[in-house]
Image (tube, rainbow, N blue to C red; front, side, top):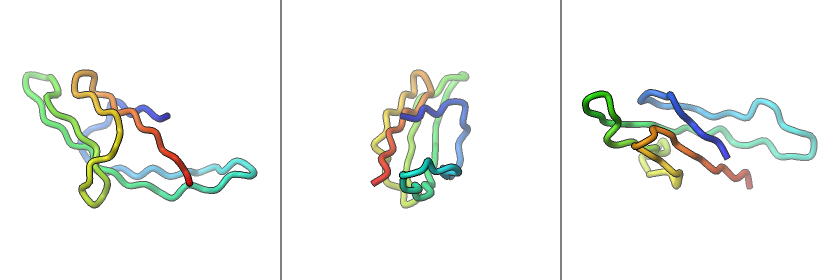
Length: 73
């Protein structure tokens, strides 16, 4: 599981740089984070793939943390 916090709005790319022996290298993953806020608080937070589809990640606008489980098939 990965947890992302402290990232601003924008497009991000996740790359696997080291592949353990016996494992398959993960494909690069591009995702966009967007948010809205008021009075210094996040009111809406989302994570979408580069095609604009919402990712099945646990997104909390209350904490500002995105939890992601990424499976390398």
